[in-house]
Image (cartoon, rainbow, N blue to C red; front, side, top):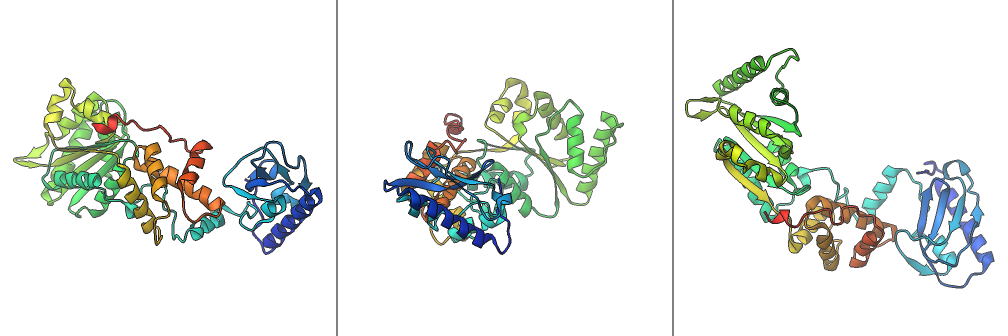
Length: 390
């Protein structure tokens, strides 16, 4: 995206461009209503976008004071982008509510948050324990995680849909564990027999020579567990995206849990994954593994009321003084995301961008529907309502 130079002349340049646009449009003396959205950037320059199909100024161009960051700006009809503004063409093109794009991205993000009175972006897709929303289902899932750790359960199993908040719960757990618990986190481990053990040793910051045999690696692992137990520590290995583990890998994990000291478990396993992990563990050839699962929970998606509360919570955590989404907007978001937190975040974030571009302070059903109609939300329909009922 082409950017305006971030110097003291930026405002002067933008104002000059607006004046030149106004003069061009005034000369055309078009009196018909004009529906404009915003100026948007492209490889060919900065365009004025119109929703009208047969009206507009084809090829009308202006040259900005500094053509380097912006190239040529031209008015392009027959296209619709974010937002709506109805008025005469001069008003539409010179309105302050549609400033020229091209600021540096950090500055744009700052304006985005300032527009809504926020201190941070509320719907980031990066898991952040500071934004953790304790729905009833998330509370039960976390309670089961804690229960498994406190009772020294050999295997704890937590499942949920993609983007349901499992990883966020794990991060919260890791932040609050006692110092006497040594944790290894293995994400998306794959490989043949012996490779899994290497992943485990590396997660615990233990050496594993590439030339070491499986017997050598297992002996090192066993000595480590015994040494930690002698110091009064416990070892917990957490496997994220555990649905990718093969049957052989799960059987290898079961063998790890056989390492014990009399009645005390030296190793605890926490497996977190998508719903199919439950089906894998229930297979007849893995019944010995299933018998070691002492704590398990499936994290359901959110219902409509919970989605509304979730949206309000994240806005509050980002510094908002009220819920910026009205009820009908929240219901439409739930309908199109299935109550999956990650998808809710995506659609909410896009809706706020649309509202910001249109100078709206409240996100309405119409704003969300425009996002959906434009095809900007790729997550639409990307949830499985049947699997969420497991």
